[in-house]
Amino acid sequence: MNNLPLIIARYCSPRLPFYYGWVVVFAAGTTVFARMAPSVFVLGIFLSPIADEFGWSRTLIAGAVSVGAVASMVLSPIVGWAVDRYGAGIILTISMVILGVAVISLAWATVPLFFYLGFATGRIIFHVPVQIGSGAVVSRWFIRKRGRAIGALYLSGAIGGIVCIQIASIALSNWGVGAAWIALGVTVLGVGVLPSALLIVDRPEDVGLEPDGLPSRASKSITVDLQPTQDPIEIDWTLREAMGTKSLWIMVGVVGTLFMTQAGVSVHIGAFYQDRGFSITAVASAITINGIVSGIGSLVWGAIIERAPVQRVMVVLMVLSAISTFLLFTVHSLAAAFAVSAVIGVVAAGGNVIPPVAYASYFGRRSIGSIRGVGETGVQVGQTIGPLLSGLAFDINGSYKVAFLTFAIVSLIGSVVIATASPPSKPNQFSVT
Image (cartoon, rainbow, N blue to C red):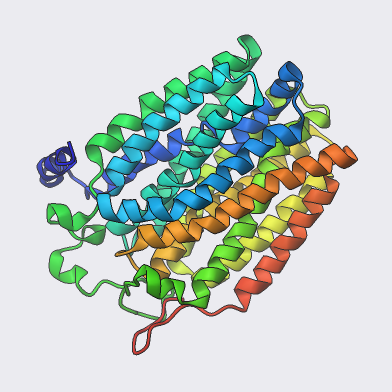
């Protein structure tokens, strides 16, 4: 079975009018599409219906996101190592099967324990194998065009988010919570399993190709052109070397705060909008706008990150994160909800695209799975704290004000930290900035 993608790639590659790396982007993109079934935006659509049907508090429901994130912290380094050792294709294929079954099982989750088991399992797949595996395999196939390739990857995720939200809202409105989960689980299995099983090859060198589709000799001197005034060679770091740098841990912390804000807002935004008097259809429309903007933004951020220094782009992203959270206080009409959702979509797109490119640009391709496995622990810490903080703020005060204000301030602090940090460098070698 493991040889089948190689056979397909070796047969198809010389016959395609384009580089086979884009086939890998498509196949990995189907898993990023499918992983959106247990996304925090989709849970936001379910939050009020589940609370009404089962009498659960919002903190209890949002806690499933945090449980998934805690479990992901333990599994992330292991999965990162497995991606490097066994390849992304097999990891992603198994993950899609588990995800589909877990989401379908939520149709029968009428007590908190079963809900936590099913949804937390989905969140583990969301956080770890798909996030690490898809980003790692695409980063190995592209260097110069890495930004646009990662952007295309997460365009798939934005489309998946839109589709999953629409499926959930239609099913909830017409057939109830159980039918909505079944529809989402079937979508996962139908979209994500076969492409990842048949089309993903881990490295271009495995089929006699080179990154970006360049001729073999040209690729030997390929550069990471993140800053047009520099022309450094690509540097490969081992996991141990990367863990010895301050740059890795700053990235872990800052990206963690970004996702704390994102998760803390996204899990509750559906309920937040409904508290403002908007119908579930209007809420779904607002979140759909978020997905549309996120999809377009993924391509824009991908183009930007190929032309601008990683550090500067990260600073801009963190400032936008703070602004988007402050803007939530201005939502008193449906038009304002649509506008704020669009800004949040811009931030979500940047959070998807920029960190994978940054890790690969800083530390190279060889051990990117293992390095991302460690790096994603920051994301998981953030996504553990964010939803719980928002849920507790609401349950205690009847308002999300304290939580949203905290997120905005923390994002601004993160922008200062990343602005004053230095990129990693090896002795006697160029650094990537």
